[in-house]
Image 1: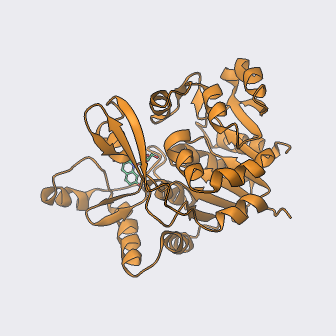
Image 2: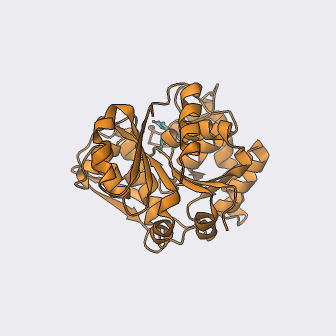
Length: 311
Ligand code: FO1
């Protein structure tokens, strides 16, 4: 039996923009959002979950909209003192943001798991959607570059995605269990929506958890993805560089090929519409739409379009 909720697979900034639109065209309490946790990092003794935080702050309507991450009207007083004590200076943690990490770390130390912590934070911030970390166990993305191997956040923030990527390692992924209710949610959802997130380091980690890809294959006719690649480049982040290192074609066709076993529907940008027939040959129903979400109106329109796709 299908229910009336939508299951959303999400990464960070690109997903948050789309989810902001989705939450204005679908009752937020009907959204269950599984979020990548392989970017999670421990700094200053605190547990930081970047993708979870970005979506939490977005749905709580406190995100810094300019940056797409962190809390709006932020100050960095605590960090200025912390940086006297520690050597690294590349991860910007604002005073308000730090409050979340202190609270999360406190709950960890009291024995809560990631799912429970996310539920408490959502409740405290008045979020009606269910925000689900992909696993309660540790998975961490490492980028192997020609200079050194580094945590994804270091590659992304400290080195601005500049080093040449040789390989990507998802440490712990083969042993990590996905959150157990993901399987029930995949089979019971009205639709499964894959956000325009990085297919490799955001969505790739969720679908790489044992059993998730097989569960999605069984319901692929109700799975809809939105391409994060437009005219051969990403809107934000290193998806194009990481796809290149894995030998994938850097285009919406490359993304469609990467997802082809698990999706029945794919939305590409109007600018790529010439590639629609090539994707349809893969057995994927393909739609062209304006996917650049540079205003709340456009976020809503894209979300409404996805909601209206007939499955
Ligand atoms: N992104 C940056 O570009 N620079 C930062 O200093 C930074 C700090 C940061 C702190 C907490 C948090 O939850 C997110 C933060 N982000 C920062 C965003 C984030 O790390 C990335 O956008 C994602 O990991 C990519 O999905």
